[in-house]
Image 1: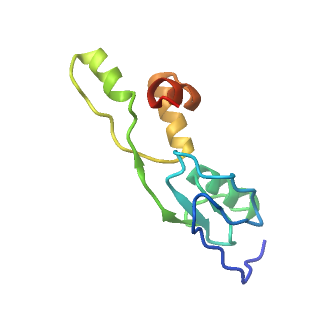
Image 2: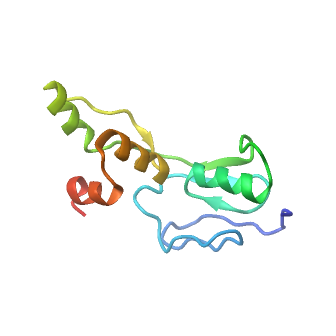
Image 3: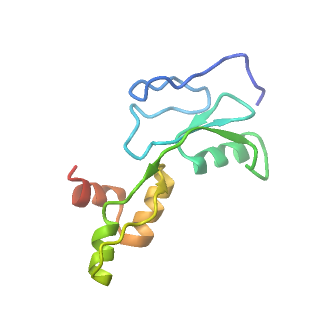
Length: 127
């Protein structure tokens, strides 16, 4: 894939701009706190795992290191951690801050709490 002269800017999370390499979601979800841009083309993703996959698949790179840059990042603190920590130790503990992107959130919820995002939203976020 060849770089183009097009400039794509992510301006409003409620109205993502089209990308020739992907179909963006209708709106950003609560876990979409990051934004990554391919160094080779105008592709953008909300998750570093997805961007690394893009670089490997679209640009035949065996390594995604240096293949994309971070445009936006934020952190997330799991609301289930204080409950689990308090139950386990009797103390009020707070888990580490995690990168707010779907792959990190899903991995944390699955490994630490045996939850899916959907179950977390219902049980903890009240959605």
